[in-house]
Length: 475
Ligand SMILES: Cc1cc2nc3c(=O)[nH]c(=O)nc-3n(C[C@H](O)[C@H](O)[C@H](O)COP(=O)(O)OP(=O)(O)OC[C@H]3O[C@@H](n4cnc5c(N)ncnc54)[C@H](O)[C@@H]3O)c2cc1C
Image (tube, rainbow, N blue to C red; front, side, top):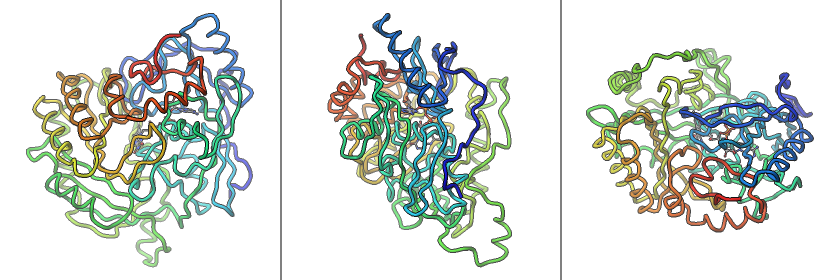
């Protein structure tokens, strides 16, 4: 049981802060990426040295800046800065479990998958999990990520008791929920400083198994109705938007098993189940263009829909396989070819379901194919000014960047979403404009004021921040 501090991954021989390396980095959606200098500190001391380098460079070059990066699972340009410094935190490892209190103190570069591997056998679950195990704790806090259980459990940030933040000045501060900088750092997209460690509250769990209810639905309205009904707290609908009846799909509602399995057959079937999932296949680097097309995805969707049970109750599934299905296929964005894809994730309040239909119809009218569509319900928003979730419905759409008419089509969708009081998720974004972000995030000015106090020289900036005006340009 991990009572004492664990080093989860031995640091590979890699670049210390004295050896800056030019690199091209991009978001998970692919595309051209950004030319940066990347440093990968292995300790707090090396991180401070990295910061000194950035500050010295900034002294010579007014527009120079830096941004923190975790595992680069944000889809767009949040974790990159063209011509700037990228501080890669993936070697900041280690955690300590307080088994009595269900708390873990964890360094920022530990991934949620690494935590699950150690904590679930010890009887603890990370309360909020995204659709991949490959995100760092720092990235989870900076995007204030949500899981399939937002309706009952809120965001990742809601379970952070305290965090340590390295400011641009070099000062390391410990923040709790009472600090305004704490709220500005949840969902703050790395623009308030480097999160170096955090204390997280965990949820007790008996093992890596879920009890899953599944329903096949014929329309979007049916999916909304099932997601509104009672059932497990991890709720999600996969939607097929390419078929003749767009909006049909599969809804699942899952809950961790709260008693050990009594049925010996079920116990045998699920023996060896894990909270993690291993990649079984890897998409080759030279994936031929054109294989992923509306025709092939339509056929895949048809198969997926038909294979799902019409109605199934209490099916036992391993947590990892259920939560992280995409992690079974390594490097899957390569399927989209060199131009990559973007994910358009919106949220609209309850009562604005018509916007979901309007967005789907609009993209179809513009012939923008949607290769993956996921619908979830959200509970109330939290207190962090840039946190994405608000009470209502979130729809995430994977769209090929090469689709003709993509940008004008999404500009119109932005208007629909903003007019309904909704917003688009910054960690997935690659195209929002400053005016739209201002309309979608009404507490932006409040957040900017806190950020300015934490980083008056505006050292922390990213391509996302400059493009959307989160951090106003200039020296
Ligand atoms: C398959 C898949 C499924 C996903 N499912 C979900 C989901 O269900 N819900 C959800 O909310 N998100 C989801 N995401 C998005 C993902 O959870 C977030 O983008 C997350 O922030 C990525 O973490 P990362 O470690 O890769 O961070 P990066 O992508 O490297 O960085 C993301 C942001 O965090 C900042 N950051 C990173 N580390 C630190 C640090 N130590 N200190 C300060 N700032 C830091 C960066 O500057 C950047 O702004 C999914 C992504 C993928 C690829």
